[in-house]
Image (cartoon, helix red, strand yellow):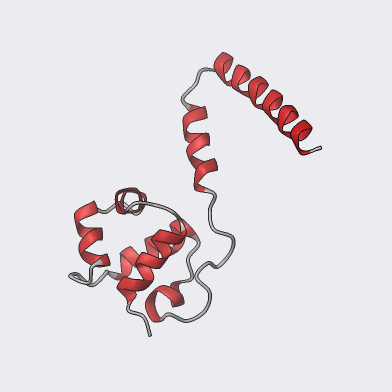
Length: 113
């Protein structure tokens, strides 16, 4: 049976996140997360629940290694990042980004055919 530390690393790696990015998303320091993942610190219940809710992770998997990793589809972190960036633009720039995106989609569809 794998340890909770190994399962946490498995979760982080399956999401393709660095320790820095992962810890930022669950509101703890990278140092603390590194200590948890390396087995130097036992994760608190609050941290496990944050991981579960933030990334749709099965809490039973985290705690005991039971069941599937994801309760539902994993979050699309690239899409979330794109949305964060998009929100920073003013309305005019957002409209331009949408136009460019539609053009890119047309080009992509032509390549597939």
